[in-house]
Image 1 (cartoon, rainbow, N blue to C red):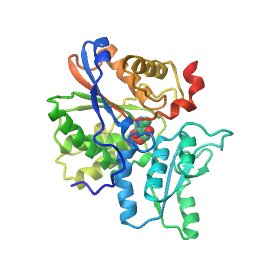
Image 2: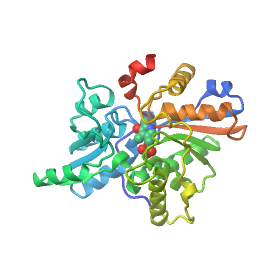
Image 3: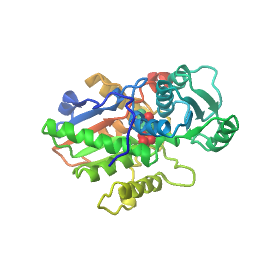
Image 4: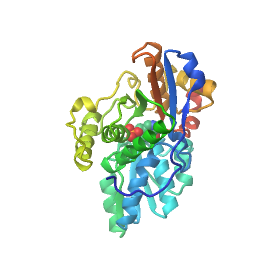
Length: 326
Ligand SMILES: *Cc1c(COP(=O)(O)O)cnc(C)c1O
């Protein structure tokens, strides 16, 4: 069914009950899936995607990987770690100008040995083709991992994750009604959706949009729908997807990508101080705030079992320390 993968992380990631927060929101039973503990240089959701990419890279004999993201990209940091582990040269295209000090994920990518290129306003991989040509002229054999690792191959990481979750649910005799998570380049969302349909689970996804800007000339919804169509064919899922299968909750992305407001700060403090679990300010903090808003205002059905899928991002807290202390 799914293609082969290369083992890079710690799986299954823990599934835990949020005991204290479930008392605070007594209409709901709250759980958390700890992909922040997936291994590979401080973890995160990209490890699942990278297991499929790295297998493909090695099987096809490439020696160099390029990918792109923001300066505080968790995806780039995890890609750098994966490349280090299997001995590949890693090039990262990061938006903006070279900063005076390296901090958070940027510092870690540097320590992991990635070759870093700053690309100004092009923060979503617009310059990958040019760099690929340059490296090929130097006789490198270059594999391109798309922005955020979001194509069908990367999304398989989350189809696989649904299988992992299903096993944990049946072992614990547990039913989950809703999954909240941060959605930004779409691979996580597409993979979870395909997995839920492939394994016939009755779970409603609540993807919290992080970045209000789309991908090039495409909206994120369109990009996700395209992966759903491809996955539906490859996995022989008996379903016809439409744009409503690929939509996101857009209520929390208004401040813009990487802009930290009182909402993210409140969410980070609430989970940290009630359960001892750390979120990040860009992705999981924003998504967790979206979940709190849904719980507080009963935007989802009462007495349901709600899972927060923690996608990682810890290192970004250090980059945003000033905003987080305000
Ligand atoms: C990349 C990332 C996401 C979003 O996942 P996509 O597959 O890009 O939508 C969420 N949280 C964290 C911490 C991430 O690094």
